[in-house]
Length: 102
Image (cartoon, rainbow, N blue to C red; front, top):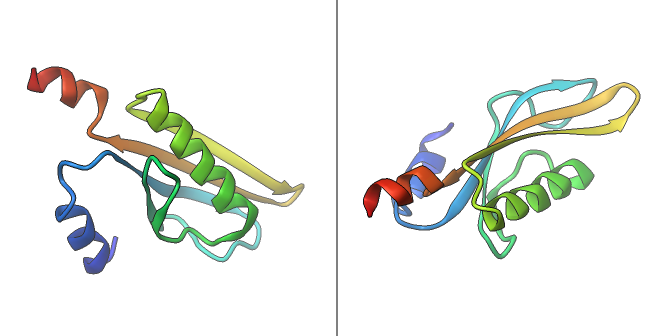
């Protein structure tokens, strides 16, 4: 993660959000492993993991994960036989963080 991304997250410690990070890709993709974006419950984002259909599917999955109060989720988007993006979503605050704060 770059400095701007870390500063952005640091300023939002108490906000509900998901961080989607690319674990690995297969084939020609605009972004590679380690690239992250923030997804908010309303579907808005900060950053990009490459745009297009893969980013949209991951964004929608992140919103679903937030709605279901999941701590994390792994998603793979197959764009064709040779191209895929595998991503890990972490939500914040996680359900465990909320339980521990009570």
